Length: 293
Length: 161
Image 1: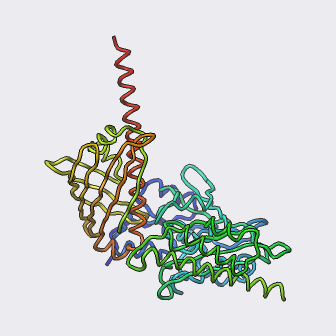
Image 2 (image 1 turned 120 degrees about the vertical axis):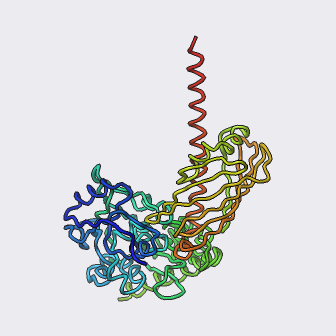
Image 3 (image 1 turned 30 degrees about the vertical axis):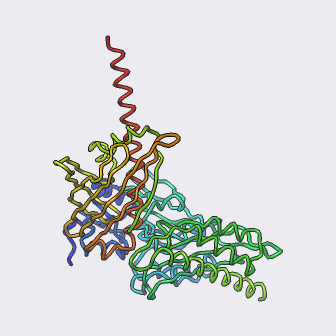
């Protein structure tokens, strides 16, 4: 179907973007990659009165290490993350997660800011942002503010972003080189929305015990969140088979997945346990390879 | 889709029952509700469901069945949202006195059809749960406001000669 009619603007600064958004509160939508918004408009489930295109806005691109943090501009595309040589060491978990985003065509257009603003519970980047304790920098008519990713996603397609605000960048804490990590997700067909997925990382002490454990869930949730009980099951222990099993069981018990036509809640719950087992084994194996080299 | 839940409201059962039967309070509590009019046995309702970029205006009917004063009722609803599709369902609502106020239990089933279901079936469950939670937090706020307003009116009344 064709889109409903809308006004189109392509400003050149973030300040102009938020000014336009403030002129049409709730009626204007930002367009960047358009990979979620345009299908919704084509179905006429969304009929924004105005689209504000970010294509001419300067300063929203780039993957920039900056001391203790890594900055991802809002208009950074999945393709840029996948192809980044820097990220192979600066944030391998992010890079691996982004490889699971939809199909090549979507990854060629879809953006960091668009995915965060859309807030789909099955999207990989919101999960990484929450799991890694990221922070969003947003600009609104009343100025700039920073929001912890853990407080940004409120529910399916619902975020803390106000009608007159735009996302400028996602800031992730810098990634130590010898960190153990894994990302696992499952969809019935490659490129489909994840039925469930997990992101995992931890740092090991001299005795091989896992510390600073972070485990996040995607798909099997109303919004991405960390799995505190699974993290606790792993924390301070050598991640052996028994420990991994405990963490997987804890994860299955604490998720609250939705059921729908694709999969009932119980299946997603079991899937979270399976994926976490795989992820923790993968992370442990990765550590052996690294320490052996 | 099934949604179950319970909520402890810091009010006595008669107050909660009154609120659950007050179109004004209900209108303010239903997320996105634009109009709620009482017809003979049921209500005509218009609501704007807005989730992310998706916006759909639903026109429909709300009817109350099995009404047992101070105990509960069954709420039946159905509505159409034009191009977005339709929604229908029912909710059993019951209240009982509990420590600290009134315990309100609800169990709802709902179906969504048409384009909304075709595109968004993945999200419908989560959105519905969120709307239910929002309904009760708004109901509580509405009742608190009403009570504060009531006290004020009384205070003003008392101050008058």
